[in-house]
Length: 132
Image (cartoon, rainbow, N blue to C red; front, side, top):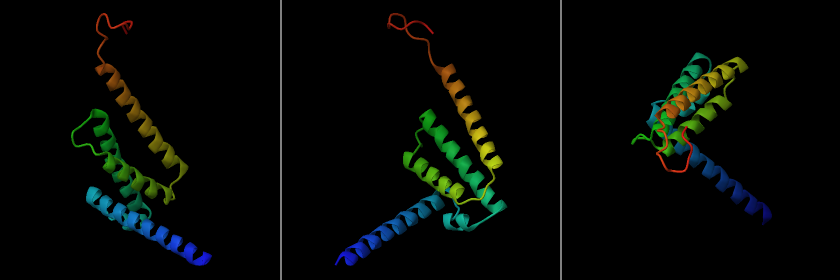
């Protein structure tokens, strides 16, 4: 009886995982026009091209969110981030490539922070805060 319950739990877990992967594959294809399973099976230059494309789409979605754009979708952002993580996790990139991506992300984050600081208005008189 115990093994039957364990088998049922394993079956349900595997089925939920397959459904989640199918949902992610469909959403990824709609957003990027690239089949996720095919991208995961690819290697070399093709894999790098897909990673760059997804990275660029993820960056654009993040910027939409920061700017409060009307077309920003948190679910799309999360789906892109998860797909990008799967692509990177199963990839055999070098540490130098990872460092270059991180450096680009940091510099873009710094640029966004600088722009946001420029947009901030000085506090109004009498609000209790010292002027900046």
